[in-house]
Amino acid sequence: MAGIKSYGAYIPYYRMPRSVIGAAWGRGGGRGELAIAGYDEDSVSMSVSAGIDCLKGTDPHTVDAIYLATTTPPYIERLNSNIVSNALDFRRDVRNADFGNGLRAGVSALMAAVDAVNAGSLKSVLVTASDLRMGVPGGEHENTLGDGAAAFLVADDAVAVEVEGSLTYSDDLADYWRMTGDEFIRSWEDRFGRDAGYSQIPVEVVKNLLGKLNLTPKDISKACVAGANTRAQTGLARAMGFAPEQVQDAQLDDVGNTGVAQPLMILIAALEDAKPGERFLMVSWGTGCDAVVLKTTDQIEKIKDRRAIKRHLAIKATLDNYGKYMRWRDVVPTQIRARGGISMSAEWRERKLGLALYGVKCLNCGTVQLYMRGSSMRAHICVECQAKDNFEPYRFSDKTGKVVTFSHDFLGGGINPPMTRAVVDFEGGGRGLFDLVDRDPEECKVGMDVEMTFRMTRTAENAKSYFWKIKPVRE
Image 1: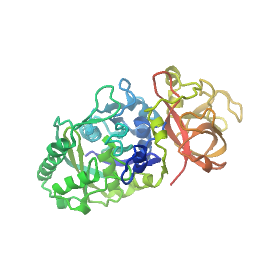
Image 2: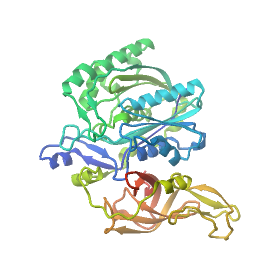
Image 3: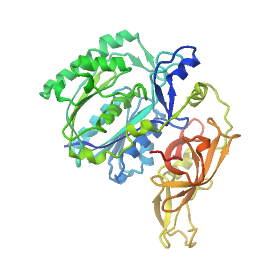
Image 4: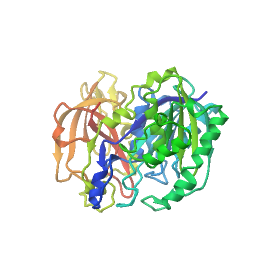
């Protein structure tokens, strides 16, 4: 029977205190902070990061499909899951699909993966959910929305979390929405969405699901309930019959409301502390409600080495400049000194080398090298023995390395100056030149341990491109 074989998550490095937002508008900002995706991050790049965390120890060539869920896709006419698939080095014949248009898309993608594996059409599916939603600057939603991503590997072997049952109500109650061309979320009067929808429909769904499975709230170890704020979430869980200690923290004060990723991230946080044989309830909300009951197996102990939620929460830096946040989100115009870009044709031509970051290993002497020059990433001559075109592919995206030398560019530093460029020697051999991100310029030093991270880079006109950068290893 299909279930969750592995999980992973991603929370951006930068956190902006709500007090910074409040100060920008001359008012109090409330407690806590929001996870803020970097200027070079979006729903695709965060999905890649969560996928890397989830697939730790898994051969990517064994995955049969990727389902990507987001309400903030960078492309509306280009398969975003294809980009993630290529970056994670999946096979060409995998089945990729995008899920969107509602906050329940993450749970919908997860259940679609479970159904596909149970039906036997697929053996394993990676499900990612990622969002980068924005509220109107100075509006009521700006200090509630955070950024983040979750990932689950669904399979029928070595299952760590079984799906015991689910129930969905699809109700076209529009409390939050965006129309084509809208940059910021819209909402109706909050009492309508709360009183007519959120405080009633999930209670009915959960009651009927537990009854269907002959369970009571006391049989649930943790209730993972989505919510726009802590008060609403805990109030809803109480109405469902759960005691306060049964309600899983939704990270609303530390991360914010992460949209389609939120219920999945809450579940992951609960699974980090789970023991075999425990039951969990996951509840999503958005033009209807999904409720899913899950139960852990002995395999849960074997996947506790992910960064997931806890370790990502501990890795952070404070973004205390509201103006910088506005520039990162393209809310205010910024004069950027352009220095080239990646064309669509070059991205396709070098797709295997670029998106999955492949170099070569010499079959004559074993030397590995990463060749990046101009519009080509193809090496023809071994730097050690000078053998010609006698290579096998060698992937660098899963390797760590050490900084050999670096420089800070304050003049052409782009949207987040200075831009830091570093030469890296990889473990196992090979050297490359990359942008260094998620760093304080003062902490940069020769010998610094770094790892690869998939990010947006210089773009072709009216398009987004992606490549690999490096960031400090933080545990």
